[in-house]
Length: 343
Image 1 (cartoon, one colour):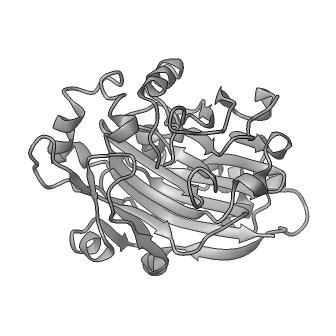
Image 2 (cartoon, helix red, strand yellow):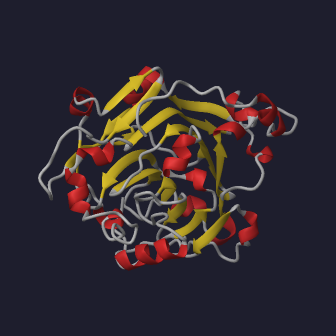
């Protein structure tokens, strides 16, 4: 995750009619596996004829999940009030575990802290790196709440040289999700027609630096794309295709997941308009994005959630929120699987 301008975040919150999104580097108890993939809806969302051109490369799921991710336990690069845990401590404290096949990543919701102290949380990243692919993440729940800053993203070496792709991110009880790219100079949305996506363009310039870390970004228009509304709808799927034509992102609610995704024969050609579209005609994808680790984390306050805390309508201060464990009952990732395909 990377530091961003507090002024930009305040403006982003105001322009999204709430407290949406981030532009950075990056519920409660478990529910059973939901069989709400409504067969009739799946049939309507089925892809066209022919076999999928994509082959399963990696499946992160179940008891094997943590064997293929590293636990980052250094200082938070975005200055959050968190102590990221190593694997042994995370599992001992029940902040990282698998239950009924679902991977859970949690923030400590049981320890009372002094105001200003850091709270235990989790940041994990894949041991493997990727320079292209079709990535499908099925989340049953995601973290949310005042001071909470969750993200599902990927990042290359020597930020921002290797690029960053933010697929699921926001702060507090933000109304919708934000999709963002961060790069060095020479990458933008160009003259992209907003009608080519189902989201709203927030910023067209992808280049990020110490003085302007907004990146090029879209704000989803659907409340079920983030936070509490996402969770009460039993989550959903975020899929993004990264190839030489650009980077496209799709979001599917639980009852509208295409049948080809559930059958592990994905074919984006039949998925319709993407939620976000970053075309290669105004950005050399291979030059700006390479050797990415996939990352999931939850930080608190920091460079994004800190400056936007008051404007989001959260009570008190961000430091006071972190001290109270009751604020983190819903700060959990419940991950059904993350699949990576290649063609």
